[in-house]
Image 1: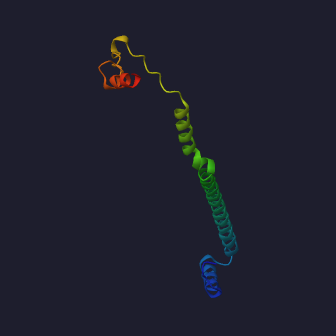
Image 2 (image 1 turned 180 degrees about the vertical axis):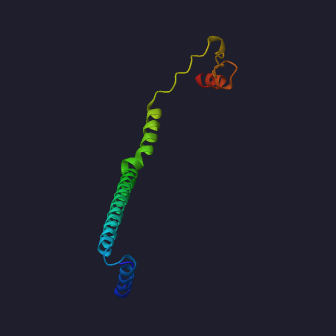
Image 3 (image 1 turned 45 degrees about the horizontal axis):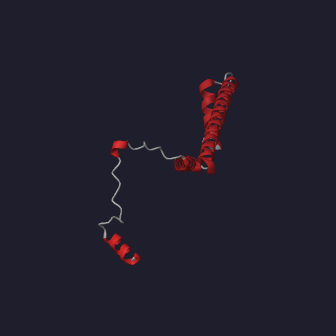
Length: 127
């Protein structure tokens, strides 16, 4: 107890006997014992409350870690990105407006026009 040996306890007892006197020594020992018991009880209660708080924090931290490390939690952002990309890929392309009549180019000249070399070759082959 407090690193005090039996020799020191005997000296403390003798000093207490001389200071207090033999009549009041039992009453003083009872009072000291009572205060020591209350002090010990308060220390035990504080230790138990502290231990309960530490256990609660450990439990909450463990649950947070387990929740953060579950496969669905790890893949959740990736799955959302995949769903979004798939929806964009499967969505029909936006309709382009039809060109105005005035903007249409004139038809190109035919390759078989009488002035084209192909037309002349075709006439030679037919003849």
